[in-house]
Image (cartoon, rainbow, N blue to C red):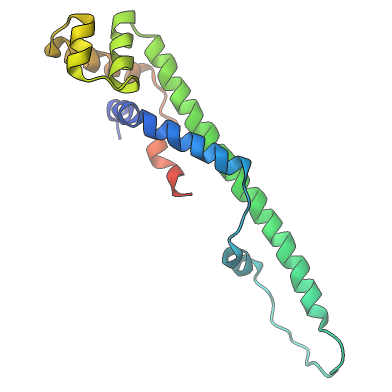
Length: 166
């Protein structure tokens, strides 16, 4: 995905990204790892090699397995929480970079872009507000996206993060 398409993608999906970021923050705040099957699979328990000869009491391996389960579950919990926090951080950074890039534009062009994508105004509303024609609005939009794309660093692309699979 080239930069211009990426900027248009961010602008068109701005509100969805902000909603999803807020949802991820909420999940992160009340995070609890509950994928027991994944924990059990990652434990890779060794089968018992000794034959049980005693008939009394509980097996020694039961307590050991419970301790391993708790340890593995805790480690996976920390890893998942850290990954989720990283996704939130990158997503917020991308949205802030976009807003800073819009603010750095010429005032008229930046205001038009904000009204169009962030303010969710229609083309007719924007044309009436700024006393411009739809073709001028389209020129402003293309120019603004081009200028943002030139200055925008696409090190992390939100479309590549698969951040909304949680």
